[in-house]
Length: 267
Ligand SMILES: C[S@@+](CC[C@H](N)C(=O)[O-])C[C@H]1O[C@@H](n2cnc3c(N)ncnc32)[C@H](O)[C@@H]1O
Image (cartoon, rainbow, N blue to C red):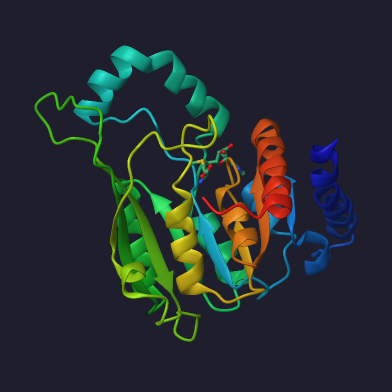
């Protein structure tokens, strides 16, 4: 089955990792073993097997607390969807740790070059990280023209954030067309290709990849979900490494990537 294939590089990497761990040596998989693979495993643990300075661009969407403490989320969402959201939280594992992610990304990127989706609470942490390292940063907004029309005395939940962090010398193509350089993109909620509750708009992910990488570059998404980043990479002739710790989403992503490779459909 496809997922079994997808797990192979990680299994090989894990075996070698523990062998070398016992002997006190740090182990790396070769980049070819991981390239164009979807690996079912923990993001941080799997990234530890990626060689230093091998990734051109990171586009990723880590899990964060879906059961918002904000009055809108806590009120409307909890009342209507509590059970469903609890399941999502549980299955997405709420142990997300930006520090561990950022330190692995610093190691695996040739030059730090990343788009990371985030909630507003974590934005400050990412910006602080960029400032400390003297990287450029930008906040990109996915604006949703059709939010849930209930405000409960507060502003609507009509956007998501991605923070873009770039080290000097990392790729940035300046001639992709004017419309690619906006920092606010409007895409409706519900235009989805899978049942993944956090699927991102394909066009937005393709925009990031086109602007910040070239053909054949290696793109990493360590929280791959339904496979959006890997599919966008295939469609744009880039290579990819996708990681997700959920078997179901690894299988869906693997199938969708195969389909993209055979049909080449751009949506
Ligand atoms: C916000 S979703 C990503 C959605 C994706 N951008 C898409 O378009 O489908 C986060 C994903 O991270 C995965 N995940 C959660 N904890 C993880 C971990 N520790 N390691 C790897 N993946 C994890 C979840 O299974 C989930 O699919």
